[in-house]
Amino acid sequence: MGGCVSVSISCDQLINNVCNCFSGNGDYLHRLKENLAALNRALEGIQQRREDLLRKIESEERRGDLQRLAVVQGILCQVTVSEGDGREAENQDYEIIGNLLRSCLLMEEDQETVKMHDVVREMALWIASDFGKQKENFAVQAGLQLRKIPEIDKWRVARRVSLMFNYIETIPDAPPQSPQLITLLLQMNYLAHIPNRFFQLMPILVVLDLSRNANLKYLPEEISECTSLQYLSLSRTRIKLWPAGLLELKKLIYLNLEYTKMVESIYGISGLTNLKVLRLFVSGFQEDPCVVEELQHLENLQTITITLGLALVLEQFLSCKRLASCTRVLRIENLYPQASEISFVATMDNLRELHLAHSDISEIKVERKETVLPLHIPMTTPFFPNLSQVSLEFCKGLRDLTWLLFAPNLTVLRVISASQLEEVINKEEAEQQNLIPFQELKELRLENVTMLKSIHQSPLPLPCLQKILVNGCSELRKLPLSFTKARFLPSFKAFPEIIDADGI
Image (cartoon, rainbow, N blue to C red; front, side, top):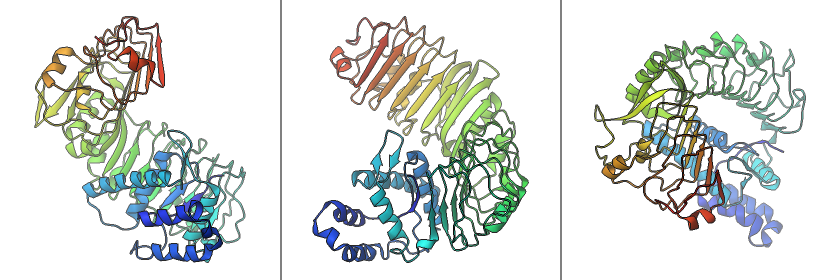
């Protein structure tokens, strides 16, 4: 049901043409060839430096993975971008996915998943293959419950192959030769072993996705022969050791090692000097003391997600303004030594998610203009303008989360088992800042916060709130929203029931 589609949407005209073809004038289906020719003319001149279309749409693929691959494919188009332009391109790709959804070229499955209708998918494949003239360049057999690599007749001429979301466990010792292969998608299979010769047979491979192969523990050293490789995803695999060959991939610009908990060190990654995107969220090296030293050598880095556990390493990481400004997702877990304080620097304006877990944190401070300042000094600009999700799980030491005042676009706040938290926003410090928190908040979850007495001392409008879950917060007797507002929330649960939901 899924698949690999190569499609580029760069203007509203193209979207409108496709929509009209399927839902507009009834004559369109009778004049399909003429309209396809019109679409072809609309495509001319859109992109100057490419051989074929490079936008990838995975049917029923996760929205985040879809956007990440789109961003990287944009970089692979050899468009020269600065760091700021890279962030702009990322936003443009989110906008493209939104346009596709609004135009019904993609359908929303749930909050995290989108899918493509089979008819639209087939048409996109047809357009991408020059109206069927180059259909042998694409081999899409995704979601077909395959248990082995299929014997595709045209491996020698295939340029893009998708075998994702199958049951493939092994690759034959004599794999097919693929001298023209550029993109290979093998994610969401059951691969446990990759033959040494496999990567020797695809010399110009650019995109390789092996993510979500939970049994995959090793990569052959021969991966070093994929000298053109620029995109590599190994997330959610059981890769244990860095293959020496991986460090020979000097053209690599995207590396995803998220949820590779068996990897205990990233020593040598500094040699991948062209890396622009490095995803290290929930990886096993969180106590590696060499992390910051390695990352500082990656001068082209634009995006990083990471998990850290040593207080000294965390301090070094946050004090490096270039690394801090690249950070999109930060998880602080099992922080050692205990009772450590955290000082965030003013360059973390690109941080989107912050997760604190299983840690004893004495205080959270903010650093502005080279000086760590207390929260009561007013701030003129948002400190975390892009921070949208914050979670605090099984942490102690913190008595309030007043620093959330400086995250005006926060949409999700989850606090679970924070044993010493007494209030979310401190009244005195909030008054000094003269800021109204949680204007974009959609979800609030508070569980087993046994000492919590207050969220906010004044009623809040909370115009975007959709979901509240309060459980095991026995000291919390009031919520900062009106009873009328609570009644009409799509989801409102409180155990035990809050005595007063009319605000304080």
